[in-house]
Image 1 (tube, rainbow, N blue to C red):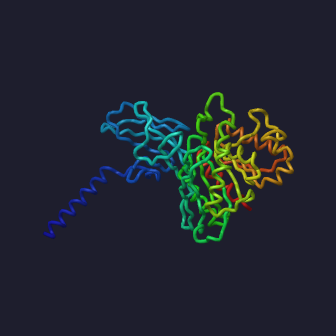
Image 2: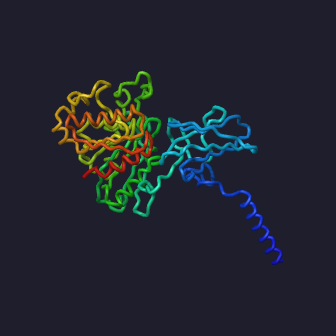
Image 3: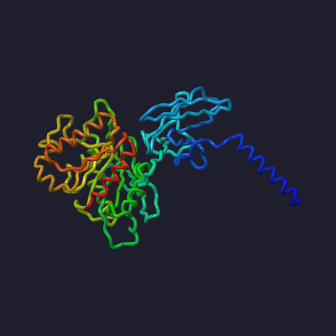
Length: 393
């Protein structure tokens, strides 16, 4: 019996070896954003990506990157469609599958809220870069909390990053950064796509950033009876129409909630706000009108020039808060701007020209360019890495 079992086992090993010989391993490695057990998408050493989908009844399959190109897929005799991209920029990218013209998510990928819907996403590794990876350091937590907004008369959800040691040190109070997502995303963006907890854990462990709370709120707010406003409307809506109710949510609901339920340092000197794209516009709109509540401000690929489309004039922009440059510089601890060098000209030129106008007006600020990245999460992760160490110093 034992001899027969050994023979069966040996034959099984030979069969497995033959299968491996006839079917060599697929090139590349599965993406870290694949669902458990999925072999595709696969990332090649040159950062091209191979996508594979079983759709035997489909007539046409494509892989679409909404911020980039669309790639055609080819079908084999077994009903599998395969597409290979150009080399992709490292970082996180949204994508969809187009099956006979219908946009669907890839069943092999995790989904992330972006582009106003649940979207497939893929993480392209950056060689030698680990500032947003989980490491063997003390870790904080991202906590989910629901609250009832008196302003909107509706339930709202926030995510709150508490730094390492928050629960173990009940006598310690912390400064707060309010960190906003971009258009088409929501309050989950920074904790999922942005990897805020990994970035902050690593910065704090390296002694580069002070421990702080980070509050991530939804960037949309409307009172009962108000109609929703889209930034993509034509003509674009006035910025106070977009963010007017959100200001009230922050000042009347959110900040009091955080200061009464978390161990904060509840004053402007220990309160910051920043955001990416639309969230950067919200940060500028809210903070520059309420410098009694905030001393630190950051815009990642996004800002509000305060000029309403007219040429920027420091004397009149933002309701004149910058008219006296010396007084503004003394009051605002940090004004920070970041942009990717590969962003579309409208966005890149807008942020850079604002930076130049601020410099000419004598407004102290920090300007950062993320090399080779566009309007994407790798730009904004890098922005947070550069911005956070300058807070609360």
